[in-house]
Amino acid sequence: MKSVEDVLLVVDVQYDFMPGGALAVARGDEVVPVVNRLARAFSHVVLTQDWHPASHVSFAANHAGRAPFETIALPYGEQVLWPTHCVQGTDGAALHRDLDAPHARLIVRKGHHEKVDSYSAFLEADRTTSTGLAGYLRDVGAKRVWLAGLATDYCVAWSALDARAAGFEAHVIEDACRAIDLNGSLDKAWSDMRAAGVTRVQAAQVNAA
Ligand code: VGL
Ligand code: ZN
Image (cartoon, rainbow, N blue to C red; front, side):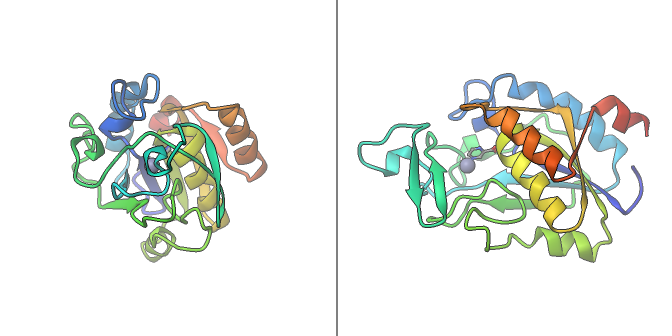
């Protein structure tokens, strides 16, 4: 994948999503070696980092009487309330130290607006505010976005759907991702992605291409 048209988008490989982290994704740490192998095959790698203020609207702790994994209605729609995670500058928000992609060109930080969540690396949850990633990818001539990281059914899926909506091909590398799987969210994510033309591929196929 040395083509300038191919970009590996590595989503949220951060300690709070690892086993033992604040919003642990089961076996989330297993993506690290898979992502590292993929990164060596791409000349263009972009990372994302979930990056919330402590006062973030997505944290259950900021809503009196609410518990993690409940949902609330916000002006932009339904919001899952999460355990406090990926607070700006904390150890939990750091990228995994074994993530080995020194040639990554850009780190997109998302979820920094206090009142709006952002699962997607492209558009915040109000579905209006852009992170600038689509413009960046267009400017550098990218055509295909290959996605890996955490979590399959939230940040990876939303990013893949928005990559498609922005006119890119989107390919999710299934075994380079792990899911949260809350109330059927993983099945729903795959069916939404299939309907939007996102393809589901395996790391070995990508490495061999
Ligand atoms: C994520 C929930 C909340 C993710 C981020 O990276 O998938 N999920 N914040
Ligand atoms: Zn988050």
